[in-house]
Length: 200
Image 1 (cartoon, rainbow, N blue to C red):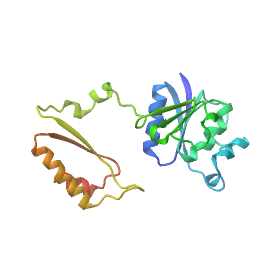
Image 2 (cartoon, rainbow, N blue to C red):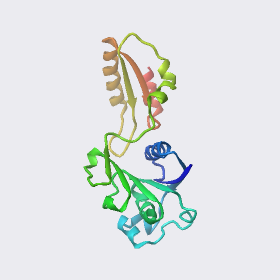
Image 3 (cartoon, rainbow, N blue to C red):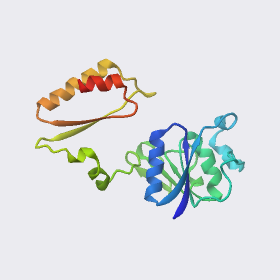
Image 4 (cartoon, rainbow, N blue to C red):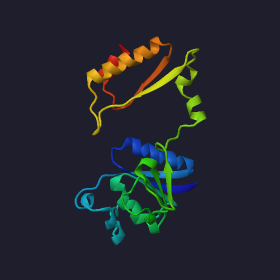
């Protein structure tokens, strides 16, 4: 089995899932490295990697992997450093010319374009028909149309309030009264208080 390294910004669970899904599809035996730079690396632009200075000498050392997958702002530096040592794939817009990587996989809304850029809708994941079939919810049977609802949580873009959740529940209840069955899934960021409101 070919080997791989994943460089992912520390704490970015969603990003790590994307990288792991790609590694699984490529059949790579991977090591995962959480990247959390301190001064001065944290504040250097990605172009600093072109100076060919190893930003992580305690990690980046032989034996080198066949493929390196990077995702996240801080992961650009180590992924770029590896470009002459391994095949490099970067997920999302690296904010540097994509030509420095073997491949860049970026969502369409990033409007990134180059010969080695693959534009995708949404984000990478490991969901497949087989994966869905194995889920407990796949045993749910209904004669009614089913609507799946995925509940998020607070982020830098939005703060969920009790009023927002209550309004959403009123709208969902209306759908249920119109003859739909609802499958509701919270995320790890959904506050317990909001889950309680939804359940009630």
